[in-house]
Amino acid sequence: MRIDVLFGAAEATSADLTGRVVVVIDVLRASTTIAVALANGARAVIPFDSADEVVLRSKSFERSEVRLAAERKMLAVPGVDLGNSPVEFTREVLDGKTVLFATTNGTGALLAVQGAREVVVGAYVNFSAVSALLRAALRGGTDITIVCAGRDRQFSLEDAACAGRYVRFMAKHYPALAYNDAARTAAVLERRYADDLPRLFLDAEHGRALRDAGFGADLDLCASLDAFPVVPIYQDRQITKVGPDRER
Ligand code: MLT
Image (cartoon, rainbow, N blue to C red):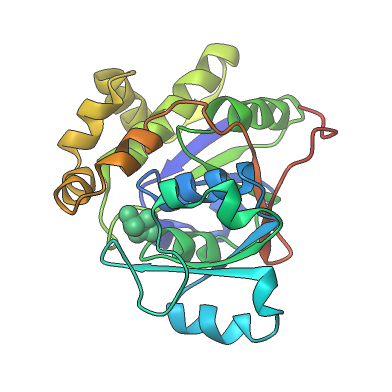
């Protein structure tokens, strides 16, 4: 069995995806926001490339059924309900709603991974829940690919370190796993930061940019390990949470 890491969605080939469980990670902030939204009662999150697509698609829903969320350059796009700030994705705002969601990198990464057996959304806030699903996948003989969304097609430290946490956890349980070099590199990075996520976010370019833009509370939430224990699964063009009946 193997677990591979890709440091950008653009690197993904069909061999990396076909028949595998794929984890998409955009710790700051899209994958965290998706986990928070589903944990706080959103019925589903539907990813889009742009705010224009969000607005267009909203016309096929009753307005009261949906929340429109779109981010560019860290900020909410004018005219929608929400940006990509997970602290704003509360139960009061989201309960029972479908979130139409477009972000700079994270939703594009989700849209780019086609052909996988399953696509799940991973972050620190749902680490143990997603890890349980990954363990079950390996037990059942399915390989894993972790896709880091990155930042503007560049490597991003926080996504790589989070990927490394998943890799190290799996390595503990399955010592005979095979890895690509990116997975080994991610594991080394993870050891460097371990549980010091505030330090990780301070070292990461996007973490500093978010702090400077006034999103310090988002960073605290994104670092809250296992605070939102859901497994978001992307199938049939929408992300919903895996039910409690699913074997782990
Ligand atoms: C993205 O998708 O690029 C990010 O989540 C950006 C952000 O922090 O809003």
